[in-house]
Image 1 (cartoon, one colour):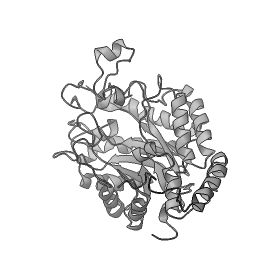
Image 2 (image 1 turned 60 degrees about the horizontal axis):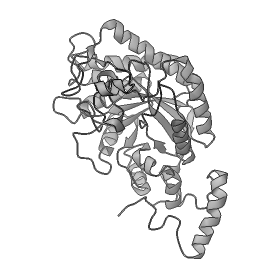
Image 3 (image 1 turned 120 degrees about the horizontal axis):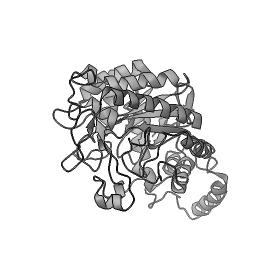
Image 4 (image 1 turned 90 degrees about the horizontal axis):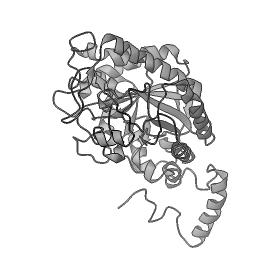
Length: 392
């Protein structure tokens, strides 16, 4: 492993420079109340920023109240959301992390239970317990799966209204002080559902041909770039493939990625799946370490756009190898960060970047330096056999 790992070299997107190439993926906490952030979310995101990643992207945040997936989703559809978001951003930046927010509309996935309550369609019991009934809308009246609500087929006025909602949500995110925006174009939510022929069977200008199915996502990107500062990066999370015959393909994504780059997208966060049935975003796929890295690699090579790799990238050495092989520009770490929020700082130790705890928050660093000295005197490594970074 090189003495100057790429994982800890700065990376610049437009006017924003990340201190390293480690990104905390947006992950739903389902902890918001009526769209508002809660103390748990403040603690969660501060912890992620404290953990040393270069960029922390806030979970899927919805541009309209009706467009939420669940009752636990945060929103950015009202001006009242700006102030708490601004406070959260300020706290995260105290620890040297750049901040992003993923903006989205749930589309035909609207009306779900919180993930830990079942992740299925809302039931009468959920409504009786206080959940607000949410009605999905989408490109075509095709339910996500058997037993799910049939979405309302969006008309021209509704489509234009959603475009305006994305623009208004982006304006609020900018006012809140986020360093960058990520547009959710994956996992079967509204924008991705317009892309996929599995969910979009329209015959008007918003459906049919690949050009027409790309129209809504590309229109949203163009409208966002009009109101975003030129120095502010715009990312998209993209399902590069549906993994289902007759659905969205890697080849389609190469075409879209080239168009996204032309429209002003700076990096694609390469995920996949999620366009059919409930549960995991890739429930139709057997998953293993780095199972989506090849998708990042292909878009980076064939579309000439910067990419982030995501999906069961658990160890620092594997993350570094992906960068060394030129398969991604950034590494997104998701559930491994929930298991170990200090993954980035532990990676710096393991890769020999920092062994003195000098960049840790001072209330931690002082104690940990003394602790490491004591362990070293006994011939022990702080990240020894129980380090959790590379399970046997």
